[in-house]
Length: 199
Image (cartoon, rainbow, N blue to C red; front, side, top):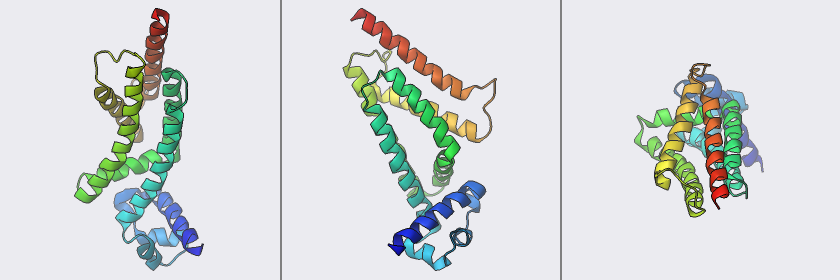
């Protein structure tokens, strides 16, 4: 039991330090100090700084992916599920999860091992979205001539791009990223309602 407590304390400290300092400036010594444990405990439980942050990201990512899968599995119109996804988007940015995700993605640009891990994490989200797009297509929803895979590419790029721009502080009245994402839900609602009128 003490082992679980120690690793959890280390993960929580790593999250705080990552949000405060970013991945490049993160030191395992500082994480150990924040967690109140000897530095050797980080190496014992996680092996390296990279593995520590990946463990943190995997844990949080699995939780959020499960939350998203549960939401998309509900029998609700797609536009309502899109609106919920936009609510989650705001929550995840505020929680710091998105910052960690993008910090590690950027670190993966120069580390093939880390890049491989990050591609697997992004692929989990892509697979979930692909199921939603395929389900919509099976139910007869028009995808505007796009394949489900192309829909996923556009949706992923829209959310990832909006996250990166918001993290950079680029969102403004001139570039209303959150509002634009929510308006896509309006387009989905119009499409769904038009199809139900036809049916």
